[in-house]
Image 1: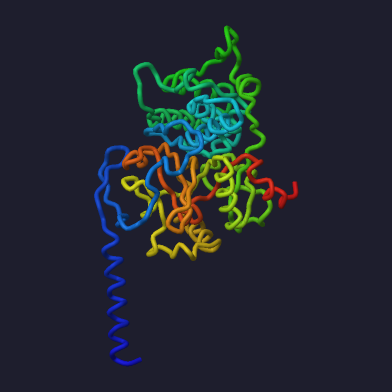
Image 2 (image 1 turned 90 degrees about the vertical axis):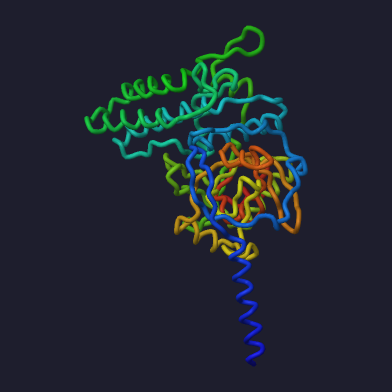
Length: 390
């Protein structure tokens, strides 16, 4: 190589490094708890993105609401998803209760804690299919019937409640108190103290009263057995069902359909284009996700978006740089600037920081690399399900 060519190459290399240095920077930001944190960020101003929520021509969903200081994104995402499903199935606009499901999820976590003598997770997090299981078991009510707030409260805060329940369960463990009936009765007392007691019956047409189970099965007629969960990992064979190996799958569900990444992504895209919304979960603690700018992308200094494949996804899951930390609801799609974009309804704090409060615009590369599971009605994935032998 000539000296002139070498000089040009070095100059271009330095300019490239310079451009990256300008793209990334540290900034102070306020967390949802009000603390100030210093985080790595990047310049989002040069990224072409959708113009508005309306530009997606969204499928029906209720306006976003906050989960506040709770770890219950899984309930907010899944209840929002089921509300959209009820509308799609011709049942109308019915706002359901997230906290009815959350209340009973804590009961089942405590039940398993007793069953396995303390060797079971007891935390706020869970998965979308847990909400389906709780509705099968306990039914569902409308938000107007039960909101999980005490009189005078307007925001959710489950920190003190989870601390008190954990303290009690630890006391039970240390003293060998494994009487399930007694433990659950005490957990209910704590839940009622912080959330209020859920109704045993609710009014429907006229003066008729129904139980939450009757409301779910006879009034709403939710097809709960038709909601399928999908993941994409090499630790089990593709086109088989298995466990999603994350802490929030606290009961070790093995009901996840495992498919290669291209088919996993196309299933999401095809579903939303065909009128099915999608509940989705994965990793949102990334430099390419910005609440202030309403978008989530994978920056090229992380990985070229065109090179995202099964290996890139697998690598990040195995070294825990992709973790299961949030659940969301996909309610719209558009193709813009050479990319697929998805409209995300988000109950988290960061979604309130931008122009479009309660929403994110996720680019396809972020979905492929950082989202880990999704749930959708079986009719949206008929061809994919044919590849499974049940």
